[in-house]
Image (cartoon, rainbow, N blue to C red; front, side):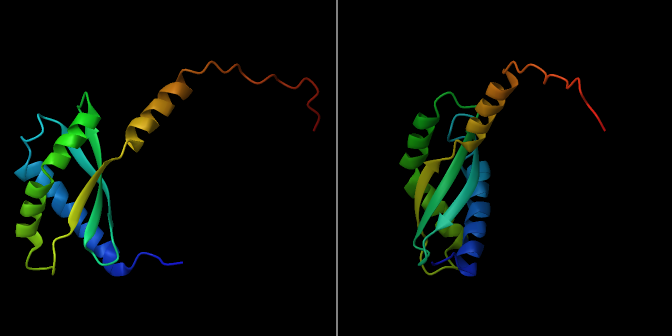
Length: 128
């Protein structure tokens, strides 16, 4: 079984930091006020492909926003290249995915809080 190398972990963390900066500063107005968070980055063993997981807030249509982000992939990669180009041999290809785990967690919380669970019956014959 092959694990993730320390080099991959370090590069993933750096990409997450740099991409977060790009979305917050360089492209802040590009997505109509949507709040985009980089929730995770997985990098291939040769560091040539990065899977980027995004979480969206203040968005009515996450699928449409994901497509909009994907349409700007080359622009995002270009900005990333200017940031890290002198540190790496190649700037990885970026593949974006929607991470809906936060939304799913909120949905499950709403379901649980909406349950009507009666209290457990008390035992009459409690002997010590």
